[in-house]
Every structure is written in structure tokens, then in C-alpha cells.
Image 1 (tube, helix red, strand yellow):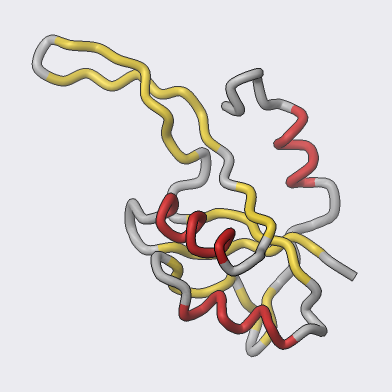
Image 2: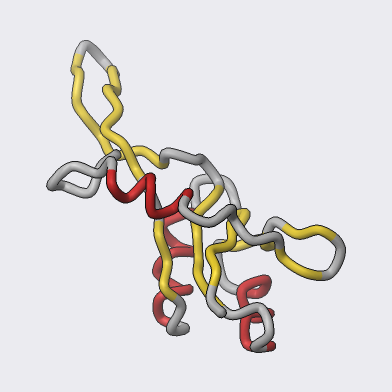
Length: 106
């Protein structure tokens, strides 16, 4: 049975990890929000991670193929308890997705 798991990424490398995990065939969810950034008297809205250094991936923990996540470019490790990853409580990822706007921002 597939569940969602949190992946801990390298600083500001969530996009890199997301891209490489998708290339490996994983379903990835990387929630973002619109953030106001000010620089040199200029203000602009930019897309920022909702959970910096984290993204979500779904897989079946009984399938040993999930172990490649730890060596994926941009990723450091899964949130784990001992040797096995800890599943995100049921419904959390789905609830975040329901709060997205038409551009995919929470």
C-alpha cells in the first residue's frame, strides 16, 4: 500500500530533488506559496516552498526501490524512525492539495 513520506533535501535544492525523483518514476508533491520579495526598491511575488527543505513522495515501503531516494541528487534522506521511513499521517497531503489555487500555490 502506497503512503506519502517526507523527503529532507539539501538547502534550496527542493526543485532539483523534485525533478530527479520524478525522473526515477516517483510521484512527488512539492507545495509552494506566493511570497513577497523586496530587493533594491523593487517588490515582486515569487514562488517559495511551503515547507523549506522538505517535499513529499509516495511509494510502497515494502518495495525496496524506495532506498534510491537517499542517493538522489538534491535529497539528503527521508524522515525516518530507525531504518524505516515514517509515513505522513493519512489525509495531510490531500488536505494541503485542496487549498491550492489555480496556479498550484497554497
